[in-house]
Amino acid sequence: MLNYLLGQKVSIVSRKVQTTRFSTKGILNIKNTENNKPDCQIIFVDTPGLFEPKKALEKHIVKNTISELNSYEHICVLYDATSSKIKFSEFSKIIKGIKLNKNNSSLIINKIDLIEKEKLLIIVKNIQKIFEFNNVFMVSAKKGQGCKDLIDFLQTTIPESPFLYNKDQLTDLSERVFSSEITREKLFNYLNSELPYNLYVETVIWKETKKSITIHQNINVSKYNHKRIIIGKNGENLKKIGISSRKDLEKVFNKKVNLFLFLKIKNNWMNNIKELNHLGQN
Ligand SMILES: Nc1nc2c(ncn2[C@@H]2O[C@H](COP(=O)(O)OP(=O)(O)OP(=O)(O)O)[C@@H](O)[C@H]2O)c(=O)[nH]1
Ligand SMILES: [Mg+2]
Image (cartoon, rainbow, N blue to C red; front, top):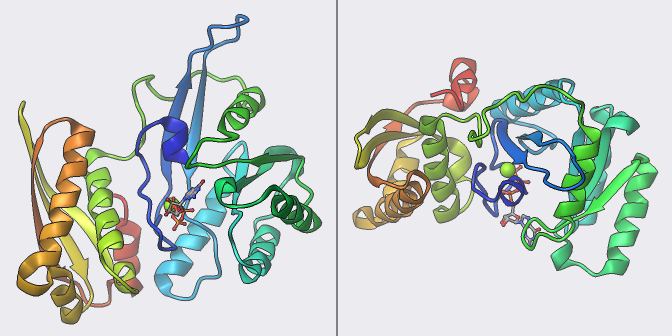
């Protein structure tokens, strides 16, 4: 959704749940040429999805996300229109847990490209029974339907203030963290099962010249067995992941990229608070 609204990639995307681990800002600058409307800057924050956490890493992520919600001026609750009924009951618990305020929240039903209109209306009716949103938008982050209405609405809602970011800044993520995220996205996409949840990527070396960038990244896993699976037969898996990440990085930074990936074993990192606080900061 954020990537669509900004017209560029700032958040990694995968078919698996719990992809986003820390909040990422995406900054949209709008130049209003009509009707003397002022220019506008909307700072979107893509947070991790909310769910019922079990492991230490999950609890850490959900707790941080809920507490940061208080500091935002408007909360857009994204609901996946293709979610099953079971997810609907979990959604109800989550909505009650975050203590929304009607005046500064909106419901956004996403993925309308995949569902019939009649079903959508039923979904909205059911959600309104849990919490009566004043503002409801139906969008497709893939096809763009409804996104303009949402932006127009947010422009009229956000308070007047000096611009907080430079007009050419797209995100608050450093280049190092963003490049770690790109590699993590490829690991999510190329690896099956639970494995991606058991790893994190950190950029340890970043050397940039006029023509190229050399990047060294550690892929930290908690078990030797995981290391073997990621490398794959004759190193084929790791090679595919590296090539795919490098291609994306070259597109984003518009330069030749030399990417080196190293696998490290860090026992029990998912339960180690020191390591968890470090996520997204290297
Ligand atoms: N068809 C369709 N697919 C979508 C749309 N929006 C997102 N997707 C797909 O939904 C999947 C999940 O997208 P993410 O952006 O990773 O979802 P998320 O809500 O950020 O999930 P977490 O970060 O895991 O909490 C990806 O495969 C996207 O391509 C949409 O409007 N239509
Ligand atoms: Mg996400």
